[in-house]
Length: 261
Length: 350
Picture 1: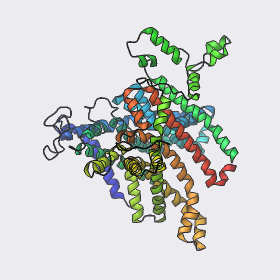
Picture 2 (picture 1 turned 135 degrees about the vertical axis):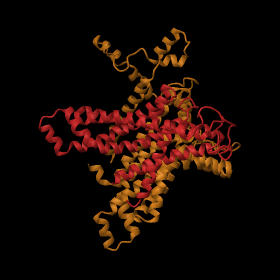
Picture 3 (picture 1 turned 30 degrees about the vertical axis):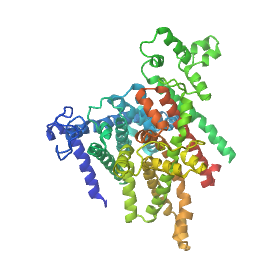
Picture 4 (picture 1 turned 90 degrees about the horizontal axis):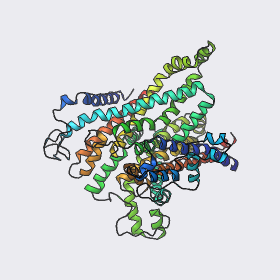
């Protein structure tokens, strides 16, 4: 608890990012899609953050960008958590050869790094934001299955699960009324760490230009278009990068301290 | 020892088959007909049929049950998956859709560039990460510990594409110390023997080429090494902290052993097993990260080729490259498994 102040700072940062996404139209009157002035104006010439290569207000793009930048990994995480938990819960409750098969497939899929798995999907379906969501969501499943399976296995060994079996509870009841609620706190912690991974993964894919339409404000895609103007307009690269790094850092820090508790 | 290795090799077969299966299934998930994708939308129907025949797309995906009912066993196993496996066993990864070149050959040609980058990055990550972790554990809660923990937290949080761009901005644009991309400067001739530029330039005794190769390697290696370095530091620290609480460490201290001896001889040997494991896992991160690093620094390895293929939707290249990376990952982890026996002789007998 020595670093309590840092923890508050992290929560404040994340809160500010969410708030920025929610009230973007209030904090800026500029439209993130429409050019309003000369391109590549420095922040001092066009406060607060200058303009991008097409003369659009960069602050508006950053603020509106928070919406997609935060919701893409959130959706991807929901996909991962939903499918991953269903698979691992089924594996643990059914057990036997189904469990072995699921574990074997998971281990094989884990040999392909999650990010590459996601890229494989984007290559197949073609670039676009829905593809990025699905790709990062599916790409994270193997890792999540493996970790959530061990959480469920740990709980399954508890006396009260045996007692429930002895009372004649069905598998479905064991899974949904006993295993799932008791695993919830650990699953939540796992999902938080996973969100940081998904955030890194989605911004990586959008940075690689795989989100399709580059006019859509999103931090990774903005970094990608900003790097063409690294010399004349470094702020176009520095600002989204700081936002991405700080957001991942705060989630990591909070996740770690949640786990330490 | 040999028996242990053979056992591990046999255990590898299902994993390899699993990887092939996963990649094969991904291919089938993709909407549209691969034959149409190869020939373009306006291809004549008969050409599409011919390609489908060539690729075996007119066969069932796994097993032909109808053929089995007719007692035709060869027809029963003649499926897309089996044909795919057969081609793989002959090192045939298919041809690039757009450029019509064999995927396997180009991968082999570009692979040394990626391996040179990845191995050097791992070397740096271990060289910095392990001592930093040991020092952090030995001086727990000191300033040094706080600095290295904060550093590793920043390390895992900073996207490597951003770090790469910031380094280009500082070292190439502002200071003009380092080249912003590529493997060698124009005009530098390196006789390719191994295709590892460092080794080749040393073999040729060409100092100018060696310095040039190292200059080109510096930024990509730093960018790629950051995340594994941070994770190795954390793992070494927590593993050392666990071991340092053991009774035999107290005994070693009590009998008056020097701290240096306790740390490196008694503690490190036992703390190293989880660290080796995490190093093996990080190989995967490193190879996936190569796609990014190579894209930013125009590094002519397989990562950059995979990226270009993703944009062009040239699926055979993406598939072949992913397969190669997965296999390299599996085999390095086999080496990690085997190294356990040297570090902890008990493992062999389990």
